[in-house]
Length: 191
Image 1 (cartoon, rainbow, N blue to C red):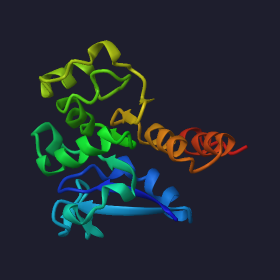
Image 2: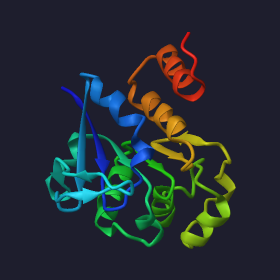
Image 3: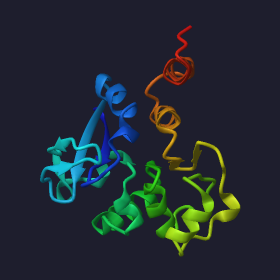
Image 4: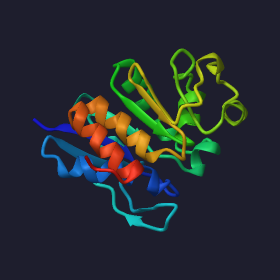
């Protein structure tokens, strides 16, 4: 049975932050990408892409989920997308992987999910400002992407590193394949 990677889409999501990730997963026969939104209606990305998700939030079966991917976007800074709070907490409780990049890390901080895990974001001072509930400063890293436990976090300037951490977590490629992929997209080197 294929592993299911659920990607949450919402109006204004940062489309480039998942641009390296989704084609590689989509090409692999072992995975299904499930794009979902709050209600399954068409959304528009920050770059103006009009997208019809394949599912609505209420259609998801959490037991079928192998990873939740949360792209960034200004909605997170404004505490938008409250409809996925329950889903996210339940996924975390079940120790299933959650990957958040850029402003989506603020959402995880607001829920308290980063307090006891190593993590990164766009900048710790801004993270503390946007998520007053956040108590994880001692675990903050200036790395571009961090994986700890079932949580992957990345800075908004690190979609390649974000993808690499996800590939490791889901076992998309072996270690050598991930390193080759990373060198190609980060440095233009294939060897």
